[in-house]
Image (cartoon, rainbow, N blue to C red):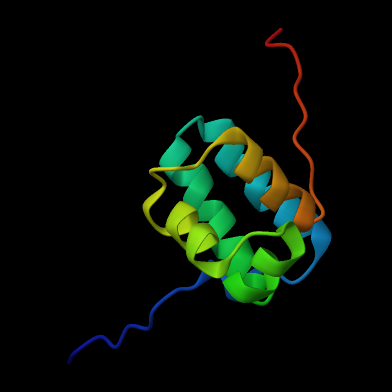
Length: 96
């Protein structure tokens, strides 16, 4: 008997602000820039896609797509603009 599998898409479960913030916090805590960009990509898809978010942050679709898909140009200013458009903020605490 073959096991049937289905693709998992975390974006389908990011339906409220609290869940999105927790999802992004976990990725930020990883310290892995690729994971952070992937998490942002997932949240952008959950929030209506690249065209909608690009418009909100004042970028063209191609620029935002490039940042979210290859991560090669994921500068802090762009990341912060995307985070702001998604309604979440970065915070820091001491490692005590």
